[in-house]
Image (cartoon, rainbow, N blue to C red; front, top):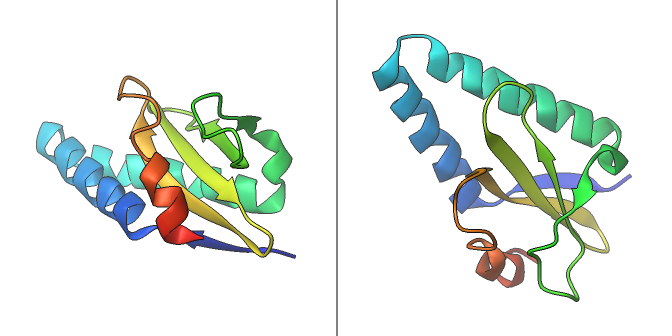
Length: 106
């Protein structure tokens, strides 16, 4: 079984988003984090529930899965040995901004 890793920039995205949601309403940042954790757990159980990311470099095996409640995507790349989450991105953010993370994480 391949292991899962989370790129440090993706971790920062989660931290920033949790803080932003907490500023909007107390407790909603925790709900966002719960949604991220639940979606990651589902992906770990079955990565095939995700879809290929059309914004990925052509030679990369990049997939994505939306959160259930929040307008965010978990973007990850499959390597020979593991899966690396390269972004936790808002759906309206510029597609593919995370592409440079693929080479830095594999």
